[in-house]
Image 1 (tube, protein in one colour):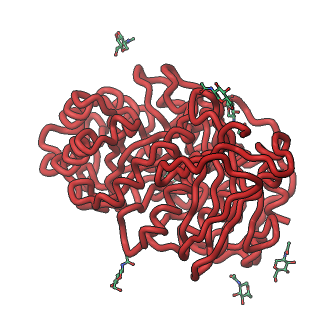
Image 2: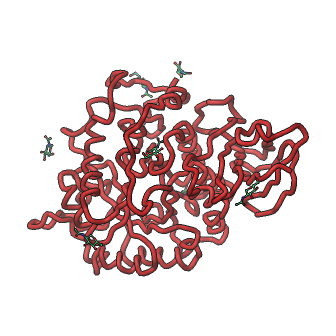
Image 3: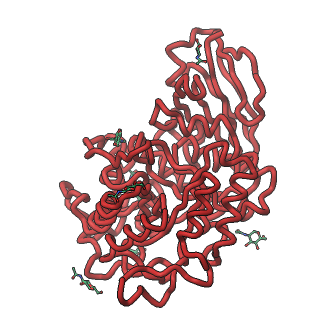
Length: 441
Ligand SMILES: *[C@@H]1O[C@H](CO)[C@@H](O)[C@H](O)[C@H]1NC(C)=O
Ligand SMILES: *[C@@H]1O[C@H](CO)[C@@H](O)[C@H](O)[C@H]1NC(C)=O
Ligand SMILES: *[C@@H]1O[C@H](CO)[C@@H](O)[C@H](O)[C@H]1NC(C)=O
Ligand SMILES: *[C@@H]1O[C@H](CO)[C@@H](O)[C@H](O)[C@H]1NC(C)=O
Ligand SMILES: *[C@@H]1O[C@H](CO)[C@@H](O)[C@H](O)[C@H]1NC(C)=O
Ligand SMILES: *[C@@H]1O[C@H](CO)[C@@H](O)[C@H](O)[C@H]1NC(C)=O
Ligand SMILES: *[C@@H]1O[C@H](CO)[C@@H](O)[C@H](O)[C@H]1NC(C)=O
């Protein structure tokens, strides 16, 4: 069964991309232009985002990367002599380095985008075959982060086999997560680290390691070629699914998929369920809360994707939640929270509409000094969800019948006092309760 296989295949993985100054050790925090503006970007929008990250207090909470996504270069091609990608002079009159200087002056870092193909997803020049030249440009410009997409792959460089990502966008799986119609599935002993996809991503990793600048490497191969197996050796994070959209159905679907991959998340390497949609589309406040809480406790990179100059206070409050950010950035514990009970479904059910509802994870004394407990209502109507201390893996050994723990509500900050045996919460559709559970009382 797909989900059990994924959890049990804890084969030893090659050492990860350990970088100077702790870059990439804990999951990234930042902002990216794509979900906010798509292709409609320029230096003003990037610098506005950077200034807002400072002004809105997000920098002081740890958000640091300001990432330029697709569409930043001259579309018609590289410089014919140097073969370098040319920043679009209309969008970026002072080049990428001009933006980098201003972003760095704010105490923030700059990210850029390319693809492991001949063209980016929007049809701009990409880095396949030019990895060293492009890594050198990025380093000289002062770039600190590279998101590396998977578009523009020439047919002679596609993989020998197809890997099944259990993602509705590719239509290759049953609702229970098993694959269908894979006529070219790999043999059981196939090593995906030898696939053409892994090689395309490894070429850029090597190029980045050869330049005189630390550039966080964010792989965006949409979960293909079993990237969970070689992602830790190749990048600091790797996309495990197709693209997110600002809809609850897609957020729930990706959360369900990623919930089965969390043994792959730890210091230096994290599966990436895609950038945040908080503040976008028609998500309810409850859905925004649940999206952010799930991404934070899964230790996903938290990359804001909404225009910050017009963000609502209610969305900003979600993105600024201190307990969730503290858990996410724990300096001593790298593992994320795991589901401990599915709730709506039987445990271990793969259900794109109803991800696991009960999650917990430990947080060191340097961080929350307690256990984070998350309760999700994946249903369409208001429901009660109850965390029983005897069921929570981090608490059950400390729990005695009738015993309690000191509990804080992570959304309100309220001290709930000494809570005995269990804690129940009424949750609207797709809302989430988050508790910080401390010492025995
Ligand atoms: C998943 O669903 C398919 C189609 O209904 C079925 O053939 C298969 O046995 C199921 N697999 C599991 C593990 O339940
Ligand atoms: C693949 O095709 C591209 C053109 O589409 C060509 O430039 C490249 O050399 C080919 N690579 C290999 C390994 O055949
Ligand atoms: C699998 O193949 C059958 C027969 O070709 C087709 O009817 C069905 O739609 C395919 N299913 C998926 C999910 O692609
Ligand atoms: C690498 O960069 C650092 C600071 O950015 C600089 O001091 C050093 O001289 C550079 N080394 C080489 C070999 O270029
Ligand atoms: C990834 O590699 C790093 C460094 O070797 C290691 O600390 C971490 O545990 C690895 N992640 C997983 C999930 O094995
Ligand atoms: C939001 O709802 C409006 C009105 O129902 C609809 O037109 C729009 O497409 C929705 N936006 C998204 C991103 O789903
Ligand atoms: C962490 O919590 C324990 C009790 O659970 C307490 O003894 C200890 O002092 C706390 N540490 C910090 C740094 O707050």
